[in-house]
Length: 108
Image 1 (cartoon, helix red, strand yellow):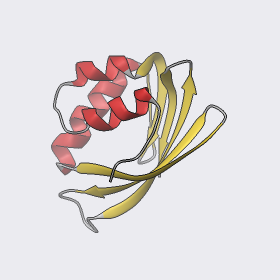
Image 2 (tube, rainbow, N blue to C red):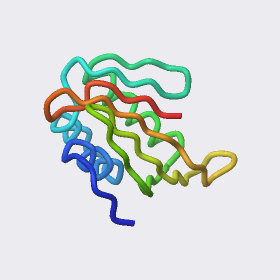
Image 3 (cartoon, rainbow, N blue to C red):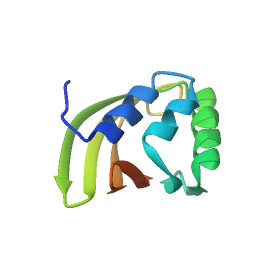
Image 4 (spheres, one colour):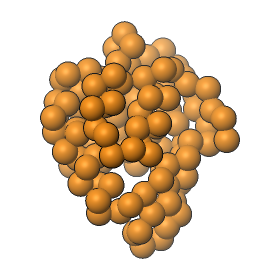
């Protein structure tokens, strides 16, 4: 499905299909914070390491299905399929933007 969202978010979801974590520099602020699976990753290097580990562990694909924005917060619903129990699942990605970069991301 074609979902309209800010460039940083579109770049983030496009990066899900690649092993190249350098593209994350184009969408995350250097001091960004990500919360996922009870973990907190702070800073770009920690976020890159998290993406590599998650992709290796779950071999997942993400397909955004809807997006809504209120102020600097965008909520994206997405279908996640991969090698994990219960696949596929629906997740909510809540992004906080500062300027044109992702400052916060919470995945639930």
